[in-house]
Length: 144
Image 1: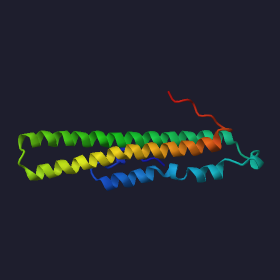
Image 2: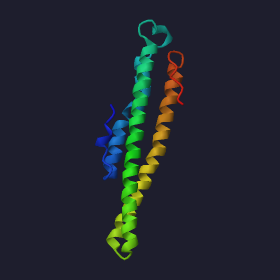
Image 3: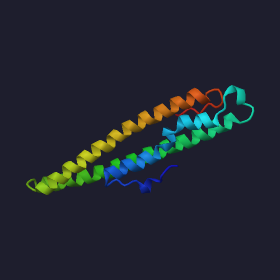
Image 4: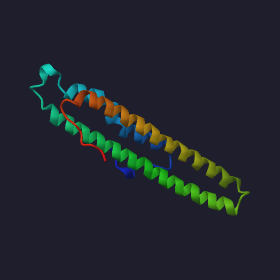
């Protein structure tokens, strides 16, 4: 269930985090998905585990890619705002409202950048669990 990049609100950081949380559902539920769809050895005849693992891998990769794109898009947008505010501050260094706005945007930018680290951890954890359960059924293509 990946939300399109356009729905990620870069203005409001709490909304940004909320949308990311929804977008991370596939990763949060990876263990459950694997337990309910990939059979144990005794049930392996009833389900096509290779196809199931392949589909799960593809939807997981799609989710990772769309979140990465969304986060980087917001980082880019916020960086532009910070750049504009810095230029304005250079012209009017005594404007307290401007300085306050710049600090707020810089903080938001740092928080968004830290979400990239969170994203890396979430993705790594999901891939590790996926590989533990699916490696005998499906080998994902090597990423270049």
